[in-house]
Amino acid sequence: MEKQMPAWFIINARVHDPETFGKVYSPVTAKLAEKMGGKYIVRGRGGQVLEGDEEDGAGAVVIEWPDRAAALEFWNSPEYSEIKKLRDGLADVTVTLVDG
Image 1 (cartoon, rainbow, N blue to C red):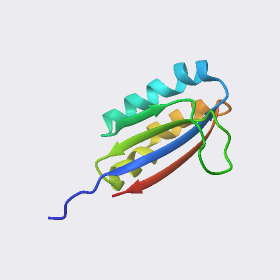
Image 2: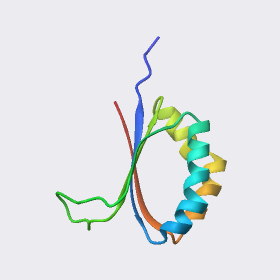
Image 3: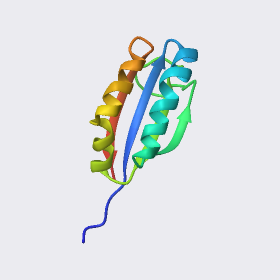
């Protein structure tokens, strides 16, 4: 039996409306992610860019998943598809999936 390798979402977000984002999008996303096996490792704000062309101030989130399949199950779920609509206009987000 092959051992599962963890996978992570690496998320960078430039939030334009932190209050609404924090009340409307973040809590329901976290609840669904945790229900589907995700574990938040980092939830940080006010990033300082040390290299690259981005501006300071973006937030970063790292969510660990049991494996790539679990991460993609969350990402492609009908529930998350609906939740993702809640952040429209609230933030510019980049999500990268990596595994170990």
